[in-house]
Amino acid sequence: MRYTEMNPDFYVRNRAKTAARLAPGAAALFFAHDPVCVNGDALYAFAQDANFFYLTGIDQEENVLFLFPDAPFPEWREVLFVKRTSPEIKTWVGWKYTPDEARAVSGVQNVRHTDELEDFLMTVAGYVGPVYFDFNENDRNRAQDLKPARRWMQWFQQRFPAHEFRRSFPIVAELRQIKEKEEIEQIKQAVARTHAAFLRIAKFVKPGVKEYEVEAEIIHEFIRTGANGHAFNPIVASGANACVLHYDLNDQTLRDGDVLLTDFGCRYGNYNADITRCLPVNGKFSERQKQVYEAVLRIQREAMQLYKPGALLEEINAEVAKITTRELIALGLITPEEAQKNPKAYFKYYPHRVGHHLGLVTHDDGDRYRPLAPGMVLTCEPGIYIEAEGIGVRLENDVVITETGVEDLMADVPIEAADVEAAMRP
Image 1 (cartoon, rainbow, N blue to C red):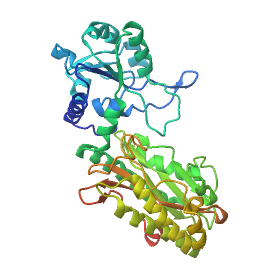
Image 2 (tube, rainbow, N blue to C red):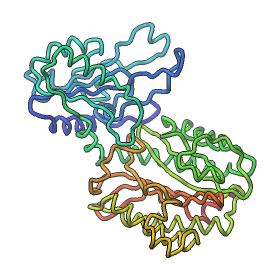
Image 3 (cartoon, rainbow, N blue to C red):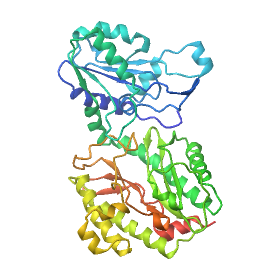
Image 4 (tube, rainbow, N blue to C red):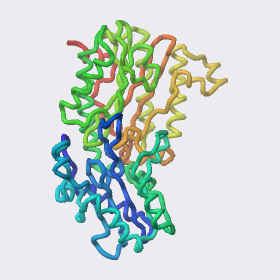
């Protein structure tokens, strides 16, 4: 592996917490992702299913975890099925987990091959009560579900139609919201590489450079330091492009006098960082750019004070909207009368929420209606976007909720306007 793997005790604990939440007599199946075809026989780069990885640490396709805490035989209580290798697989793609290697990584003692799964399920089905299947229920997900869980649920329904089926996603998603110390350490490793990439591009940015050249510098730093790669498609948006929230064409030329918005993050050990910083292309913010930039920085600092145990994201978002409205009035973008008449007048210049959960997924599977609690990791990312002026500024840091507030994981990354300018100097 490129990254340092976590101790298998972490995955043992995760499975125990999950098993404790299953109904009496129930079993649960969790699936690694399948390879996904681009065209012809070319495949997309593999990225593991978050819940499967959280429970096993296995970073490979076509594997299955079976949990049956109340099984009549101990060897049925946890079974990991790994893809069987072959001389042909070794010749074409190389290494795959052996059962011994999978056992060492996951802590699962009973490891079999995936081609044994069907016979195994035929054997144990008569002893199993409800069966849990895991589907991606992230409320931001709008993509077609290609998970193998669907195939195996259909297989199970055809053979054992009287069985009851339940959802495991809410169980594991709830557990994943509170990060263990091992997870926070992996996120810190991702943050460190993200920090280094920011310092790298700060020295690289200048008029005439292409946005995609900046993107190339980011991935160079990630791969050079043993990361999986990007946490998400990076946003490298100069000038008015920064007013497109998820702009990722990254194909324009940086112009003298523009501000470059960079929103990117490293994925290390399958855990993600997510940062946004803005750089003056010529190395110096104009007076107006600095006004907008410092307004966003004030919003972020006030917003971070709202991140504390017991707070609700919906309440934080409502307060940030009020703070942003104050700053927009000061910038001359809306009038006090407009704000009083329309409490959502800010939305023209700030059309998104202030943050999201972060972890094995960049927009992690967190319940936005659950009070914040120690161990949660979130982003704090206010912004102001003025399309008419060609200025978009967003500032984003990753934070851990503590007993009293937050730990800012990106406190050392330059964010003051003067510090950003200093980071750009040769």
